[in-house]
Picture 1: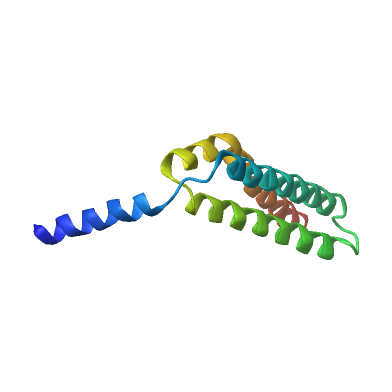
Picture 2: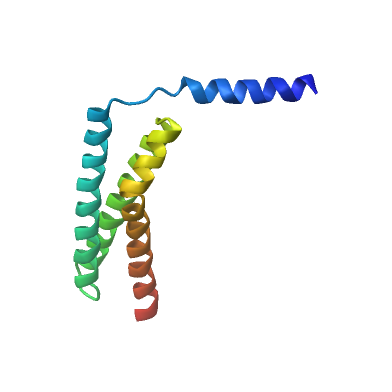
Length: 115
């Protein structure tokens, strides 16, 4: 039982180690993610428009890279936040990140359907 207490205590201590970002830093990070989101969404649209052309392969690669980079940055930000800040970020831009995943998947599905 003491071992279980130690594990819980360590877990609580680790959570407390995450310091809150300043409001300005958090806004800056969310603004940057929003900008990356818009760019990735544009690249997905470019790829969708270039389907069945010689440009599609490059456009798709660019779109996938932008989506991966954006989602990686999003996860990195979430991992650095306190629980209250994490919830705020999820409420503010979480749906956009889910939309980005869905748009990328829809494009992949469209490619499969066209073959």
